[in-house]
Image (tube, rainbow, N blue to C red; front, side):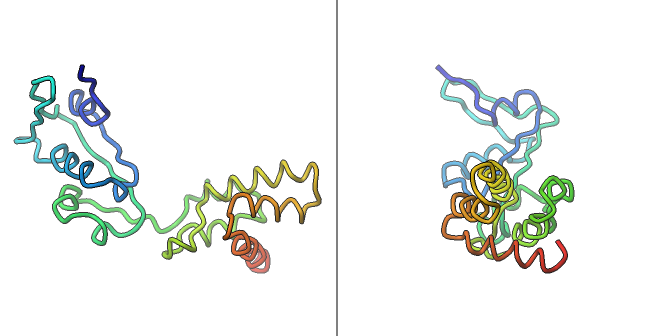
Length: 171
C-alpha cells in the first residue's frame, strides 16, 4: 500500500517542503529531488500505486546545508535553487540564551569554515545544561571539564580554550 511521504504530500497541497542538510542526501535522494523540483509545468511522478501526481500551485522547496552548494551539489540540482542565502552570523537571540561566559566562544566557533574545528550552538547548549547539572555535585572547574569532555569529546580542550579566549576578550 502506498503512503505519501513529505515531498508528495507537499506536492498535493501546494505546500512547502523543507530539505534539511541537502548535501547529506545520497544519489537516490538527489534523483528524487531533481524530479520534485522540476519545472512545475512539466513535473510529474508516477507513484507505485499507478497514480500520476503533479505539484499543486504554491509548492516550494527550501533546502539548507553547511558549506558551499557549488562544492557538493550536482549542477542540475543547484540549478533548481536559484536563490542562495549565506548565513554568516549566528542569530543574536540564539547567543543571548547562553550564559555570558559562553556567548563569545559559541559565536566565534559556530561558523568556523573548517568543519572539524566548528562547534555548533546546539553543542554549546548541551554543554551549558550538563555543566549546570554537574555543578550540583562538583566544583565549577570540575563540572566544566566533565561537561566539555562529555559533549565535545576529543575537542574538549578546544572548547575550554575558546571559553578562556572569549573571557579574555570581554565575553
